[in-house]
Length: 310
Image (cartoon, rainbow, N blue to C red; front, side):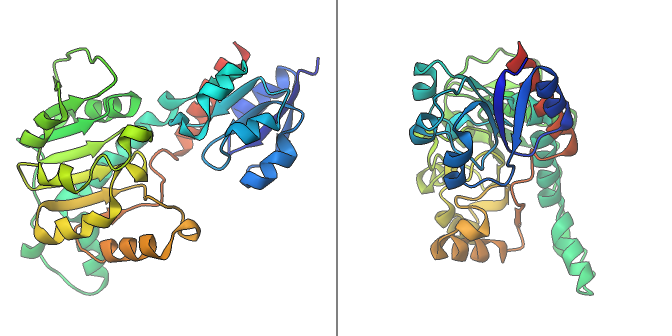
């Protein structure tokens, strides 16, 4: 039985494609689709699988009168106009638990590299420099880390940090967090600003998280601190980071996301800010790959399949 067409607008694992085909769906493959091309291909589809490439806004949803479900590979449902889609009876399905461990491992790797000067000293070795004293690292033991946002990814990161004998502070504006032995639940973000040596951000992009970490936030930090962001680039005010690193208020920055990405979508201002930032030795930037592991692709695909055919 043909249940209708599903637009595949993102890389997926074959567990999802084979599962949808077995369930009776016809798949239209356009992984590298542009937003404009979406209007051409979504018409007549009952479902769409997307990541960050295709945004299901009101106009695109209206171009798909048969649409029944939208599957999101990964976390962050801001690419979908959720109220409009749900008002039209369209199921909006996420898979945040599918890549939360991948993001958590990436955040931990970046934190260790930054704290131990691994990337910095390796690049110096390639230049023929053998600098020991200049690359003396710091240990996580005894430090305090503040995790802002305690959804799937924030919780997965806290889980990985258990063995490092540091104090883990967690805060989530929208979630009641059950107290666990290895975490300390904060009632306000100010508690993190008062105590943290490290801040890691794990929040979705929405109106009240835009530039959550800005000049005011940084100035309220009691200690000089390490800053990690593996969530959305727009939660940091990118243009102030260089200043606070140079002033010593921020000891180091590890980012997997940028306010405008990839390079082809950056304004000259944002590209200049990125170039200025990565010229500093205590900065690590990766190209939005934290949740992009081979295993995560499978887990996200399987999660979506189960929820779509349920």
